[in-house]
Image (cartoon, rainbow, N blue to C red; front, side, top):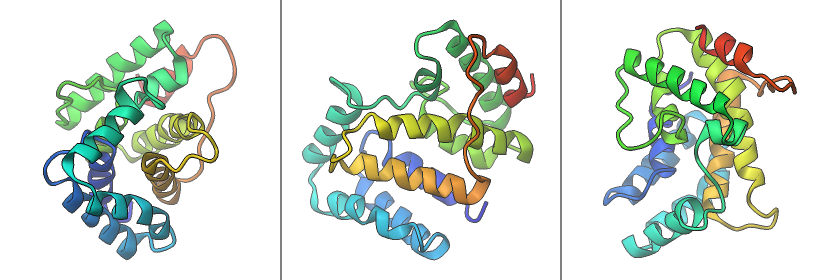
Length: 193
């Protein structure tokens, strides 16, 4: 990983906007410029939006994208498994990994993308970190991006693309779960249960 701060910044850009949102987005842009210069241009739209929007506009954009009549859901397990029981197994395992790494989940579920982005740099096992990025995060983010219309100008679509690009740069391309009815073995393999 080039710079672990990028994952905290990306997590904040995909979280409900707080008072320092524009500052965090600017820090994210600076980190992208320094460590991922080829990706930074794709973040310009988010940077401009955050720096020119008031709190109400930022909150409205987030809420209409991820909360009320959501265009996109940020829960990785939901993206991969829907409401299937396999998501429950994943949530239990991710909660364990987060506790071990000392990552507070707060009110979000353990498979919430910003929570997992904060977890990545705190994981001690580099193989487990790579597996999380390539087998869970990248395939789920791809589905998140696909939930937006192709012509969408939603700034969060751009942020998701940037997040995927950073993950691919640091960890390599996504690895799909094999298409089969039971993912239990893959979940155990990814999380080394």
